[in-house]
Image (cartoon, rainbow, N blue to C red; front, side, top):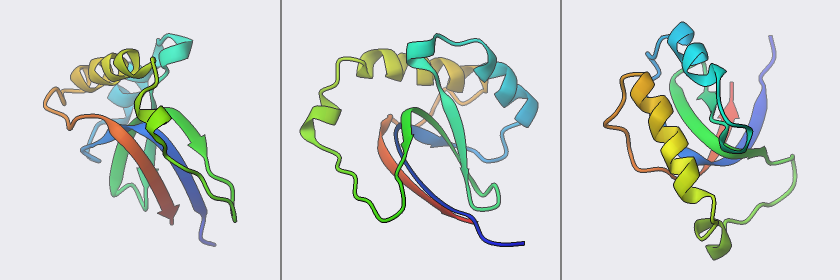
Length: 106
């Protein structure tokens, strides 16, 4: 078994990794395409994140988070979509969404 390495950037927050997988799949099943929330695990399921606007950062490349990212017109809709999913999962007291860079090496 080899190690897998990936890096993503996206807008969201962490929720408890103990969240039920079936409930997670159900909460993510019916969404609007432009506000689609995804889940990402880091490590061997130690950390779980809800993200929108997630994109993979290719190996040996750089990605920038700029002021334009923080001013995107979609942020209020993304924040609302993230909140709806978190509430459906019983995590209404989640952290405030922010831009994240997730580096997984598992």
